[in-house]
Amino acid sequence: MHGLFAWINHGAHWLLHVAREHPESTFAIAFVVSFGESFAGLSFLVPGTTILIGLGAILRASDVSAWGFWPIWLAAAIGAILGDWISYWVGHRYKEHVLSVWPISHYRAQMEKALAFFGRWGVWGIFIGRFMGPFRATVPLVAGISQMSFWPFQIANVTSAFIWSASLLLLGAVGWDAIKTTWLWLGGWPSIAVGAAAILLAIVFRDRIKSALRQQPR
Image (cartoon, rainbow, N blue to C red; front, side, top):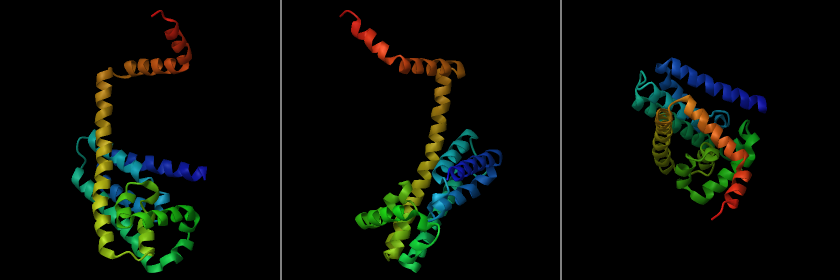
């Protein structure tokens, strides 16, 4: 299992490296990782959230990619919509039998939680679940298994996909701006190193500092 997670982490770093070196590839990467993150089964193996945040930082750091922000956002949203849509269709078509199919059968506990979550929230569970990692791909699947109506599902699916993808890309972009602002304000590596050392010393000697403060005359 450790080797699998290491492989997934390596794959995420590789995709971000490809996006950084070849900005024209960000469109395809955004689509693929959003689809994988939203498709039941693949979602357990694709760190789509991390990669989309990374893509947002890359887009901001390089000012403008070869494609621009809007097409990347559209690609990510469409990938997420299709991932949930196919998950819903699979559940609707094969019902509870899909729960015994690999790799979903290996995550029965997560599916039980998704069933309980959907049973409580209904159509709102589709929207809310998009923003909660464990439910992002499993709730659409159980919505299909539960024979949820098509159009309520699609409305929640499409609206949440656009908001989710935009929020992650913008989070990466804003995060990059925060890093640059902090870097300029602190004066680069020397100031950061001094600040980190001061924080570390304060943590190590916190008990002595508290004792010294208590002993000061009032």
